[in-house]
Image: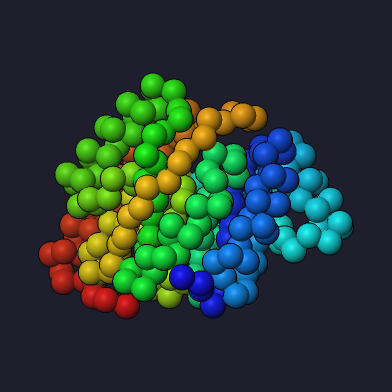
Length: 241
C-alpha cells in the first residue's frame, strides 16, 4: 500500500559514522511507499560530526532537513521533536544507527488500512545479552503495569498517523517514550498492528540504552506514566481520536 505522504525521521546522538547511510537509504526507500515524503535528522546535541555530515548532504542537494538540540536532551525529547516537526499525514521513525533495513518499510505500510500505529518487532535482536535481559524485564513490567501487549515495545521501526501524535500528550524525555505512546494509544482504543522486521548488528558508534543514567530516568518516568494512566482510568479519561 502506498501512502499519500510520509515523514521519515531519525534521532541521532553521535552517529557520524552511520548517518549518511541512513539518509541515503531513507531517500531510496521512501518513493516505494509514499507519493510524497520528507526526511528529517534530529541531532540530539551530538559532540561529533553528525550535524556537519548532514550539512554536507544538504549542500550536495539531498532532500534532508536537520533539526538540532543545543545539548543532549534524551531519546524521548529527540522523538518528540521529530513528531512535532513532521509535516506529512504518516510519520515513520527509526534510530540513526543503521541497525534496521529501510527496504522493509512496505511491511508497515501494507497494514495501515486497519491500524493507527504499526510497530515492528525484531525477529532476532542483534544486541548483547545484557541488553536482551534489560528488554525482557522492561517488557514484562510494561505488560503488567502499563497494559502494553506488543511483542517488542522499544523496536525503533514504527509508523504512526500524525493525528495520533497530535492527540496524545507525551511526557517522557528518555527511553520510556515508546511504552508511553503505546500505553496511551491502547487506553484510547486505537488500533495497533505488528509485523516482524530484521535487526542488524551495530557496525559503528556506541549504544546508549544500557547506561545507568538512561535506566534511572526510565524507571522514574515509568512510575510517573503508571500514575497518570491509573488516574486517567479512574476518572474516565481517554477516548478515540
